[in-house]
Length: 237
Image (cartoon, rainbow, N blue to C red; front, side):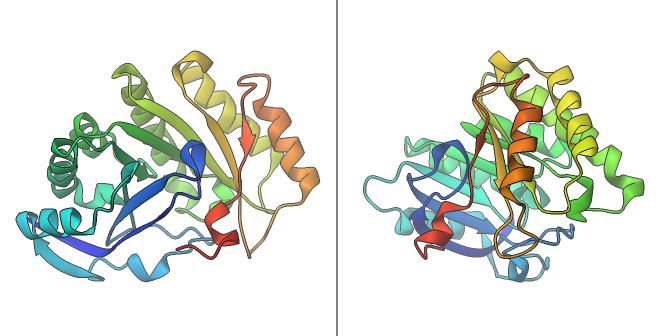
């Protein structure tokens, strides 16, 4: 089995509920989607990065692990593009007694369920229509997959949180419908966080908009947080 990796590096987690933790990032190559705010466009081509066999990639992960690393984050691109390889690498990391973390748009529930047993922490990212993630014809289908991934994750008792990236283009009514769909699928007691993440450096949302989006989530989940990409403020990758 082969895997195509774009980069491996240690940094400070800058997003989500575990921001500030020392993390080894395993960035996989390949993503078919087109979010306008993507900050890792160089890793999107399926032929970017370098190809390794699983044993080589496992040794590379092990050689890059630093002391006191809190978790290993499988990111991209989108890791589900190479789901079989990700499952093998995550299994290797778990054998080292280090928590594994999946960062994905969760576009395919079957691929998600394949890697789920080998992940300890799951970020379910829901895309808004304005993200230009996919064309409108395919949007509903991909949201349905993300909802099914969310249900799988909470049913298996994984540490699970939700992230939604928002921008100045985000429309309140569409965000409201997305939030309703999420909490029609899971209860507030089943998730470990709900993060609203504003875009950085492009189409940045106003404070007024962020507060309005916060107010939409709050009645469903009162521990909702607005958290920007904190690593960018300290110059971390």
